[in-house]
Amino acid sequence: MLTAAALALPTLALARASAQTASPSQAGPFRFKDRRGEETDAERGFFDVPEDRRDPSSRKIRLGYIRFASTAARPGPPIVYLAGGPGGEGSGAATGPRFPIFMALRAVADVIAFDQRGTGMSSSIPERPAATRPPPIFTEAGLTSYYRSELQAAWSDWTTAGVAMAGYNTEQSADDIDDLRRHLRAEKIDLWGTSYGSHLALSVLKRHGDRVNRVALSSLEGQDQTVKRPARVDAYLRQVDALLNADPAARAAVPDLLAMMRRVHGRMEARPVLTKVMLKGAPAEIMMGGFGVQMLAGGLIANPSTLAMLPSLYLALDAGNTAVLAPLLGDVADLLSLRGMPEAMDLASGISPRRLALVRREARTAVLGETLNFPMPQLLGAVPGVDLGEDFRAPIRIDHPALLIAGSLDGRTPLAEQDEVAAQFQHKSRVIVEHAGHNVFEAHPDVRPLLVRFFRGEAVIDTRLVLPPPKFQVA
Image (cartoon, rainbow, N blue to C red; front, side):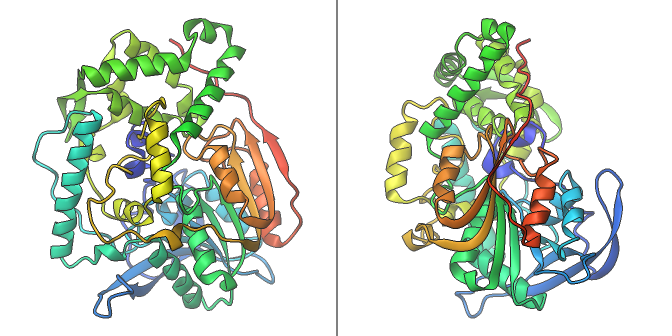
């Protein structure tokens, strides 16, 4: 699971699950161990694909996966797990809280923990030396300028090193999935994905839908939803504020959560505050503006466990106590580093001009502004010629059987955004988990058997599951 620190810059750090050992390269059977020490038999596999399919001279890169063999007498199509992020690792996800789901799905078919290009056991973009220049001021202007210049320099370095950076986009990753299907010698595959994994699944359905059997997706992110609408996040925050009414002590301490958040952001953006942090493992100081706090909040609202911290964080900041930020930020050097794959994928998916205008208009008055998917849309245009265009972002009609799962307290992909994606599915069942967040697959024990039934081909009706509301911290 992610720490709050890993949520500070969501686009760069969301879903940085730890890998299963140090990306082992040997194919074949092995004993897989999850983070709690549970073990099972598994198999590592690899296959090669072009780094940029549009370039006949492109080098080959290696993609890896872990196969958990089915326990069924007559297995169905392989179930391929698509991690979120972009930048999450299928192999890493299998070591965490979703491990029991991987194991349960073996009753239906082989389960494939796939590492998308640039992640986990798959060929990675070379790591660059850590930046030597001082960290930027954590304001909108300071962070935008820093990331644009860093990405342009990194892109040049990676290209010089022989990396076909333009090949790191969702369409090419979707083609990788079909190559994986052929490698597995399967006529069809099932898709199981979350967040960016659902964004990737939509591209697989658009490009190779005739080779997909059924899909189970959570925390939906549509083709033109790389950047979330600020007004939808405001509506979510009003929902959170209403939950404080159930706790008289919390309500008394925080009469109006959104007003307090706006007050803190405005004051700190106008006058950034010296804040003690860790930088490359050593104590350091940065100037923290309101934009940096907005980004931190954008990570905390993903799941109830971190959402519960929001009132106490803002109460402290409103009182001038910035010491509360350091434990949440982690090592700032990690947060300022670029990995290549996540940034390239988001740049390529882009945003339509119409949606960008809407986002910019809403952001002027929204509590979190344009921070939820930073460094998008701030990086738009930093590297010309990589945007996949409007055909990529266009919605499609989907006739595959689909199970769509969402948490009502998912601040990363708000339900109203997910509803737009769900409308594309003509044969769907929806599972809403009340008071669950972005990591909804493992949030409620009844989700796992529903997934098993669905992939087995059994009927699953629209379902609402309920969890207790979060207990907000106000001290």
